[in-house]
Image 1 (cartoon, rainbow over the protein chains, first blue to last red):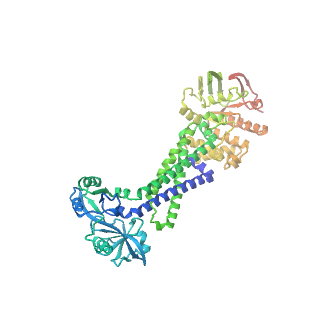
Image 2: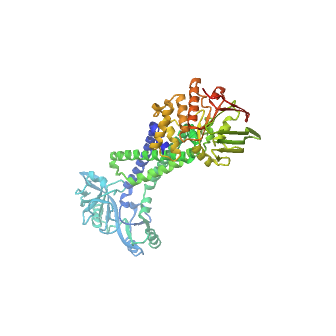
Image 3: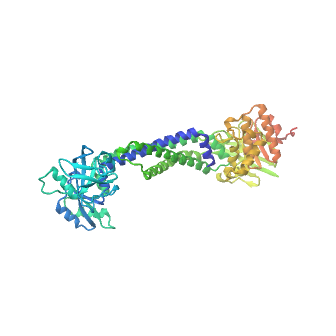
Length: 372
Length: 232
């Protein structure tokens, strides 16, 4: 500690620059991760934050809720499956609505009140308790989807009042309204008054307590013809666009996760070479190798953690500027990212550690230090 | 009483198929408070002898006992501890840690020994630096000190742990004659004041006048020994 902190104290600019560089790179990782999370939430937030642990689509829909319908006999069959506590119809359709004085595309989710399919991230107000009431997404409150706002489904459809606001409830990058099934049916009929019946897009399922969702999924797929059951996570992962967005971001993030530890490892390797003669002297006067290694590791930890603090500050500040993307400051992912970066930085500093361990104290008599 | 007892020490380096004998059956004893000048040309084996005496190198043959501790069979870890606790070093080239100031360069010895650089250690460091004429330079980094001042800080570091044996490897080679003489004078005074034994490796015969005895080394063999007249 003595050596580590005194060296950093005497080389503030050098270590400060590294800390800044690590901070900027970790900030980019955090920002990209949050953007990814925000984008994914805008694609499928409504699915992610509804209460059904299992979702069942038509097997022809290719995991696209927009292209799925469930027949009454399929719903009835699903309700009979062992492990299903509640199987409730879930409707999804995009409508043109008037909100905030403007016409906008809005996705309306219809579910049976008190049953599977209800939004789970309510932060203000309440869930719908009657027809023509809705929960909207926090992100869209400023666009006429705030608490108490009235939204009219076009053409000349129901007037829906927002009674609750939930977090991350968008779908297909559009505003979302969660309404009761009857309101959903009424909205559908405004578009197609001659429809004999309004079929659900999917089935949202609560599984029996203690039952694994994946087992219920397997049973449904094995028993009910023409449907594809998925856990909520599988439905999210399989949604159109989500996997391609994730894989694009994964490449960028992987590059950042590679660059941060490389920068750190290279810096400490260079510093080790630069102070090779001092390290050799210390070894000659009786410094155990582990003391020098510990000193190096302390510096890696301090620089990485200080860089992470800098990154978090930048991240929190930057997210204030992009609130309209539906992104939030999340502490735990930031902590996890910092720990991963720290572990990788420690791993890459092994090269510098190896150099320290290779120091031969006899070199103090010749003035030589660490050799390549 | 003998502080250093080297008997029949050989050091052989392997280079390809050839053996290079750096030290050939060297026997040397140094008593408490005795200052021995080890004189020889470049490549004569004087630094090898010093390194073996200080536990930086292990001998190929022979025995080395320092302050009653037989270090002949010590492994690298034991030698590190031995050096930390028993030997003071002043090297020719690099002697100070550049990112530590003068006082911290002494305190690092305490730190390496498991100390925390507390009041006692700081007090001793300042006392030593005062004694070496560096009382006003305790906060200076090595880069802010002259060559002579740097060597004096190195002497302070070498004495910090009260070793029984201090090894000087060409301590004045980087200094001009006047400063070199001052440093040698200081070394002699400090060693004598503490009754500490010292070996001073040098190729400069003028420096032998500060030693009690001069031992010459040529081609790895210790040669003539000559007592030196004490300093006036």
